[in-house]
Amino acid sequence: VSDCIKAFTETFSFCVAHHRSSNSSNTSAAELSTSNLTAPPTLCSGVCKMMFVFVSDLDQTVRIFLYCLLFMLSVLGNVLIITVLLRNKRLRTVTNTFLLSLAVSDLMLCLFCIPFTLISNLLEDFIFGSAVCKAVPYFMGISVSVSTFSLVAISLERYSAICKPLKSRVWQTKSHAFKVITATWLFSFTVMLPYPIYGNLVPFTRINDNNSTGNMCRLLWPNDITQQSWYIFQLLLLSLIPGIVMMTAYGLISCELYNGIQFEMSQRKQSSTTNSVSISKYEDGDGCYRQNLKRNRTIELQRLSNTRTVKINRIRSNSSTANLMAKKRVIRMLIVIVVMFFICWTPILCANAWRAFDKVSAGRILSGTAISFIHLLSYTSACVNPIIYCFMNKRFRMAFLATFTCGTKKQAHIREIEEEAGTTGSSTSRCTNVSVSAPC
Image 1 (cartoon, rainbow, N blue to C red):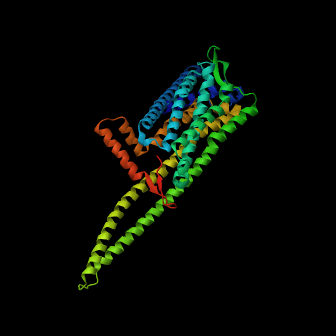
Image 2: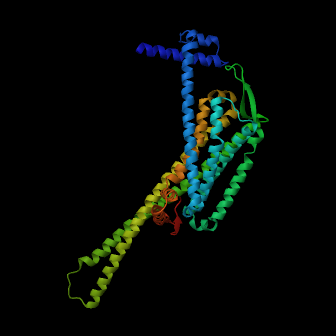
Image 3: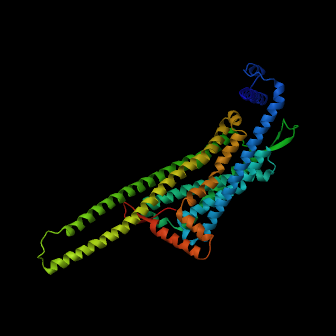
């Protein structure tokens, strides 16, 4: 068995070297002959061909499965978000207005980009014509731009609501949110115009397929300077600058929430200490029973007052505990937001910039499976955003159940939404001592 495994490994290694040497113009016959592999070339025509067909079929199967799974999850998640936000009036807040725009852009990315990218990669030919070649990258650019600016707008809105609540009340309205969203879409439609302008079909000849002709959808730039400037501009506009803004905003929010948590914990300790001292003062007594009636009544009133204070403080303590848990969930969610933003979009933007400056090495490394999975990673943001922003939120889950149920169950879920909003919907700011809406 070990000899068979060793022979199979050596044969497969030789096939890989032979396949690379036959497809690379930089590899000479002398380099191939000096290798340690001694498998005969005739073997490669049979066994190696079967191996590469098997690996290629496995790679295609994995890609098809992942793309289809991603497509279904993205469409289902974003359609559910749009439906719940439109049908549930209790969720029509400023933050959720931006989330609605984000869901629409993610849905557009799923419908207009994922199917065409998958089919063209599998066929190694763009069969949809020149109009679709111009439209697909254009809609993808619009979706990425709208999603990015929506994330930035949400981070700034949350920063204003939590860190500067008094100033944010002036402009933090749904009408102002609609204006920002409209400006975001118009700017995205305008700034992504180079895609339909320079997008064209480029014919090529397949060497290993009877010299048949296929088409590639490519951006034909007038010169290298224009291409390099465009991708550097994209990298700055869609990754670096938004990333800095979001990290700064969420960092300040996290500091404010952390300080608020520390402040509430210190207040609870002070309150519990004060209550225990005030109650023990009247329970211990001084051993003197000959007191007048007025003094006894005063002590009884003070005891009743202290008892009520303890009950009120217990209620406040329970509410404060719920607020603390809500704030901790917000901090965790904010960290996930920033990390997933960079994971999903930075690779494709960096790959495009690399390809603009070094076509040879980038084309050799970022080809086939590599670029396909980089595209897949960028499309993952379309299904990750619904999970992060909505399905991690208890109010949205209850609103989802209330939207798709009926009768007494629907009324019960609506009451749960109102109770959840009353419990975790506001918190006290440490510095301003005003009620602040908790982010969705």
